[in-house]
Amino acid sequence: MRVPRPSDLRRFCVVDGWERVADSPGRRVSKHEVWTKRLPDGRALRTAIPTGRGSYGVPLFARLLNSQLHVTATQFWRAVDQGEPPQRPGVQSPRPQGTPLPFALAERLLAAGLPQSELAGLSEADAERRMEELEGRQ
Amino acid sequence: MVRWQMSEARKDFSTLVERASRGEWQLVGRRARAEVVLADAAEIAELLAAAFPFAPEVFVEKTGVEIWLPELEVYGQGSTLAEAKDDLAEAALDFADSWETELRAAPNQRHKSGHVRRVQLAHDQARVAEVLFGSTPVDSQR
Image (tube, rainbow over all chains, first blue to last red; front, side, top):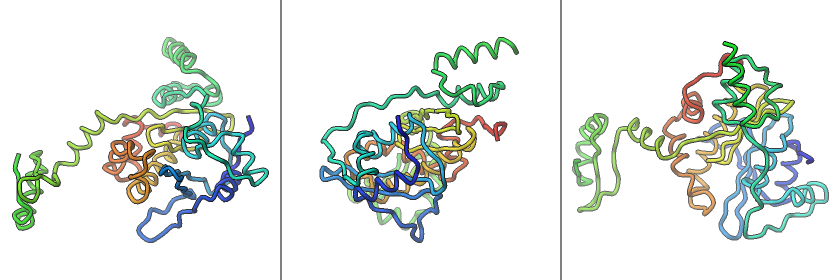
C-alpha cells in the first residue's frame, strides 16, 4: 500500500477544501499544522500534520483515512495526484487493517531488552509469547 | 450534598471551594434546578478514568514508532516509543483544545467528551501522558 508524506496530506487538505487553523493568541503553540473541514451532514473533520519531514506507516495511514479524513485510499490519491476532490458517501469506509500492540505490552518488551526493530510486525499473540520467553530467562 | 442559590454562592464562593475540595459536591442553581456542580477535580478525574479508559495502539515501523489513540482519533510519532508517547500527549492536548472550541457539537465528535475531559483535567503534557499510558515511565528508552 502506498503511504503518504506530510506534504501529500497537506495537498489533500488543500484539494478537498479544508481550512488551516491559524495559531492565535491563547491557543497552544503546536508543532503540528491543524486542518479542519465541515461536511454537509454536520460531521467535523480534523487532522494534524507534522511540520517536519517524515512518513506514515500503513496501519496509521489506514486509520487516518477512516477516522480523520473519511475517504478511501483511492479517493485520497486521486485528490493528491490528479487534484480531484473526493465525493464522500454518508457512511464511513471499512474498519482499517493492521494489528496494533497494546502500549503496556510494547513498553514491557522494550524494558525487558527486546530491540525495537524486533517489535516491528509482531502480532499481539507473538508479542505475548516473546514476553513470556524473556520473562522465563530472568 | 449542599444546594446553593446563585446569589448565595456568589457571596460565599470561598466556602463552596473549601467544601468541594473536601469532597462535598456543591450544587448551584437558580430556584430548585441545579445548573452547575463544584466538585473536587481529583474525584472527577477518578470517576472519568473508570468510565472512559484509553487503549493506545502501538505500531512499530522500520523507521520509528507510531501510536494511534482510537478514543480521540489522534496519533503520535517518534523514532522511539518514548518520543511517540510524548508526541501523542501533545496531540491529545491540541485535540482537547480544538474539541472544546470547534468540534464538540458535531455528531461524529460529541461522543468523545468523557475522554476529552480526562485530558483537560490532566492539563499538562506529563500528566496527560500518565492518563493515556498509565504511570509507568518509558524513560529507559530515551
